[in-house]
Image (tube, rainbow, N blue to C red):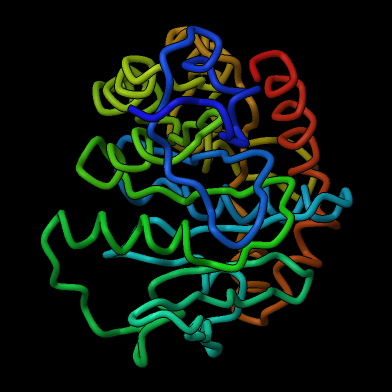
Amino acid sequence: MSSCEGCKNKDNCSKASENKGCNFIMPKFGNIKNVIGIISGKGGVGKSTVTGILATKLKNEGYSVGVLDADITGPSMPRFFGINNKRSSIEAIGEEDSFKFIPVETEGGIKVNSLNLLTENEEDPVIWRGPVINGVLNQMFTDTVWGELDYLLIDMPPGTGDVALTVMQSLPLNGVIVVSTPQDMVSMIVTKVIRMAKKLDINVFGVVENMSYVKCKCGEKIKVFSNKSAEEGAKELGLPLLAEMPINKDLVENMEKRTIEKFINEEEDYNMFLKNFKLQYSMNK
């Protein structure tokens, strides 16, 4: 392992405080102050949606924000932000076989890089084995021109497989946020991903319960999938509850209209998420 001296993340790194050194990879074209992973035990729980909401809320508060779509075989951040019709550019930097990625910026100014922004057709499948995927992911992190970022959010693939392990072991994560749904809140699959993070000495800031309720026009919150409160589920997991996210058809409609950032910033249901994340981050960084 290399020494922590010179690592831009050393002040926020538990390994540095324990004087163990680290071997994190670092971005070549920029300085990233905080790297946050968004994880889940399985797919289909709205992890990418939660990533997009947090990125948009942070940007609206004046932070410089980037998003790395680390779900290489199932990237969805370009469609979320309505930039799937654009492409990241690749620029040579003079040395043989050396280049850098220029990320796509959303309407609100969030820098995004995703494999779907680097391929000609977003519907072409990625038929790669684990080592190739891990190498591409590391390169997208190190060789993207992120510039000066306050936050880089990493939309991670679900579960505890190779790519999740690569992110947790190779990238300078400050911590992770866990996303689940009411019916899976305290299930074995969620517990596994939380234990994985803790075994790798990664801070777990808290849990977001997505698809938690439907809001009636009268203002009442109707629980659809479980009568157990989100607070009870988070308590069983031993984590703070960061947010209860509603099922919201307007979210999907605004994604399709490419007005998602404006919608998120006007939607009061997402304000508590940002407030609770910032509180837990300040307590655990």
